[in-house]
Image (cartoon, rainbow, N blue to C red; front, side, top):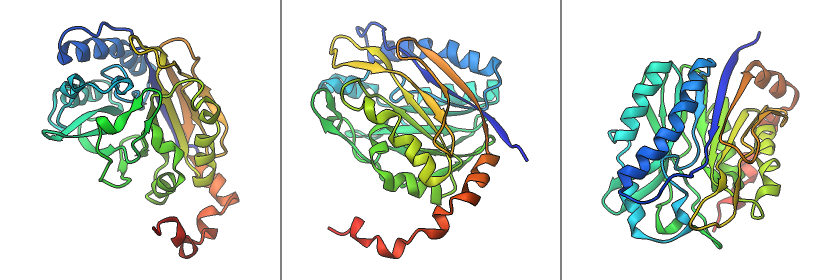
Length: 289
């Protein structure tokens, strides 16, 4: 029996002025996103995810303390509160990636999960923090996540979150499956020449290995003044067989919409019995040392 969830992903160019205060930059970027969220509401999207650190540029391209001013409390910060109202207005589940302040000087790369009635359900903090040349200096900004791999029971489905660099690590992707995720969303900021050849390899592989849907979101365009490369977009949904079912282009801000038939999960797992046949008692070497 079909159980269909309409999912949406938003990729947006961060082509806004970077002068003024952190609040000015946030407002400009949020204003860039709101029309796409409104369009998602018109199109009946039930589960919507925004791109990594959606309310700013990818500031990790440099190491400057000015970007600490973008942090907010989660929950309780102004962007989370705004998105709770937006979720309630459109009756859709929102996954909102932002820069979280736990306390002064302790910051995380975080995604807030908000239910369709505006209820804040919880958050995921990015576990794996890259420090990779050129221009991915994330250890300057983020502490590694410490909340595990939660799965959120939402009005749409059971939702897990992975963030960008996390996708290179299959262990957390498996834990999300074991925790019951039906759709795993991965908001990202990744450029051509570094990982593009992996973009449509790793995440469909996670979907196949774990028998769930994946929504992969990437930024789009070249962000001045750093120009570390082209964020190549190509946000997509793939199904538990690893097939891409909807995809954006690489040059434009876009909303990707796909109908995800969650009944496919059982069909695939009834064929590929990976959860039955896994041997966790033999995997100790993964975590030793």
